Image (cartoon, rainbow, N blue to C red):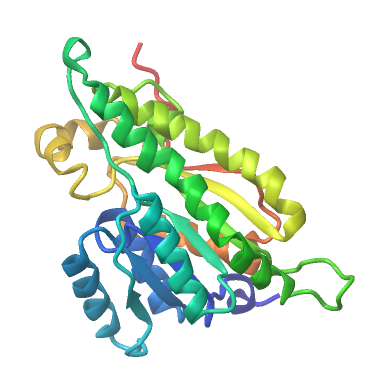
Length: 274
């Protein structure tokens, strides 16, 4: 099979939550430049619209490839409204990228209860909420790939969760709710793989290491050189790293991958601190 057939995502419908900034923006661009139609959901409506305008202006990109769908993903009502609006516009959703998230760092003695409420809601609970609401559209995408009504799903609907290497290791920084919520997300992804696989939908996780983003800006400013030096590859992530991993999972090449956790970190999660 040729590379384009294996890794092509042209004309697929994709939703990227938190797709206007950081890792989400990198993922959105990867899909847009490869011919997908990408809906970008973000709490920051202005940033959402600006990101779509920038992506639609890229060379070779159709002017309607990126579409803003502003929503506060921490809100149940916003999730319901987002799902309803997407169902109004599309009959199928080929790829859902659950990327929206937040972090909170504070010393152990002062770590607030509010951090747990905010992060467990956005990073974990609403991932389940939105996936649940969009399951019919994801099912429809998978069903469309059957060679006949009783045949197997050849190109499943895809759910890609953006996790963290801090769910695989104990982080150096005091981000207790973040690491716990991401560890929960990793296991939720495996549970969803078992639940949704028979419905023609896969569920996989990318455990991302450090990437240039607003969330990581302060940490990289203070510890950037140390973080690079601690990585076996001597650098932090680039847009092509996370974008390429998503393209793989969303393409025919990744159609039989289900319930996997893929570390996109250059191998840093493997390094012992002892």
